[in-house]
Image (cartoon, rainbow, N blue to C red; front, side, top):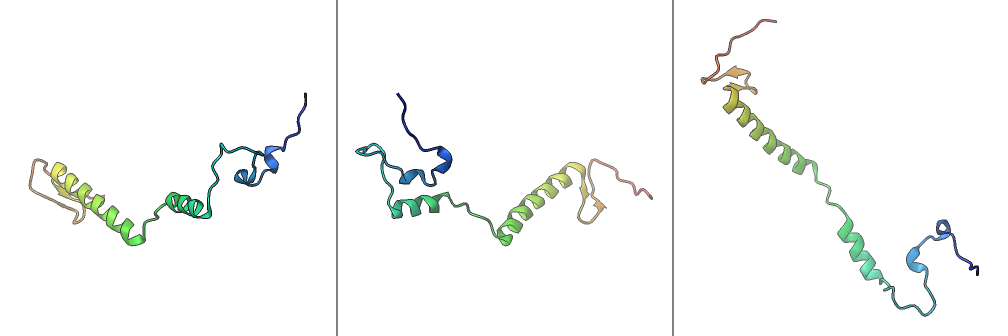
Length: 90
């Protein structure tokens, strides 16, 4: 036997296709569709939120560097500690 079918490329909205007499596929109301769209939207951080996030990470990284190498990269100055730093002229 043969049967007629609609090619997938011609189906625009799969929720709009219904099988006569079928009740196995639940229909979505406009309210449900809106809720699904809202829940899938991603939160895009603001510039302030991004600056705050990276500033905290940068401060932590600087602290770790200072503790490890007894050198302040912000002030470009050696600190007392286990390493002996010497100025090198380029």
